[in-house]
Image (cartoon, rainbow, N blue to C red; front, side, top):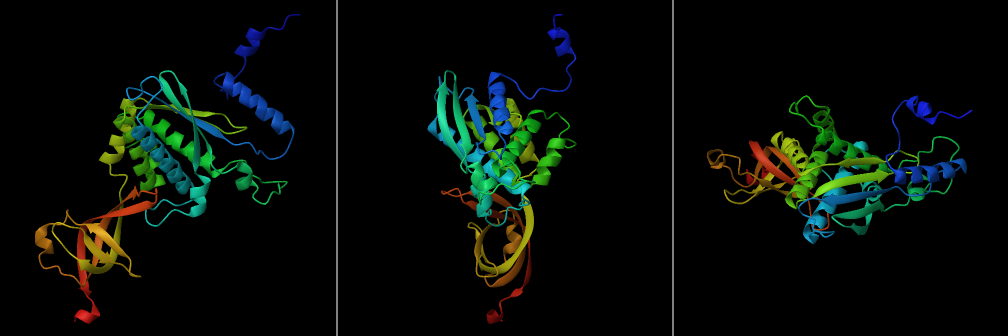
Length: 319
């Protein structure tokens, strides 16, 4: 009796966890290790393949590659922070989340594209079993970077599928829920790719999990950035209070907060007629939009833009 393979294949249901021979090879290795027991100690890995008008042969501008990688790292950190409950722009990110979402890089060229290989900077065993003891139950095999990259690729893929009805889309709802840090880093990442003429093909493979992959063209990248900017999803409205130390028509205000911290506030949106009688030493409440940028060492920096203010009084010493 001859086994009918074609009939067997036609009877299969569901979606496949593999797309090519690389996936099959990885799944075979994962299965072998799983049968051997124990928690996984092999790292996840990913790739960022850049094509488009900004790539000649297998070369791209150093400025463009650096800015693309910097904003990809910011996006992965932002999705990692959101998944751990840190959605506000204010304050510095927790050091442990920063460490657990850090990516390392190695590169290899292919004609017509530039492929950048990525791996987690933190070994899985150091994060999953930091004391070296494997529990009998409940041990997770997910590193935070795995979850962060999955969320980032999910957002990119959701943006790629956006139609004209943006306001009712799952993408917009998901992005809004994750907070302005994720929105601003996603906008910066997509805009950087457009700026330098790059089209990304991003893949991420976690041991014992299906490989994730998404690819976007220039039009899709531009649309994502425009959606975020047009709806001002990168802004975090809030109110701050303090003592006004400088006030100017042409320079940023300086406000002394509780504890002595001085913050600079862009007040160009405030009509000059409203600030004519405003002086230093005033205690004021300011409605601001907070945005996030990163400094030379990639540290998070908040920027404040005033939309309205209210004078509450003056310092005791000035009365």
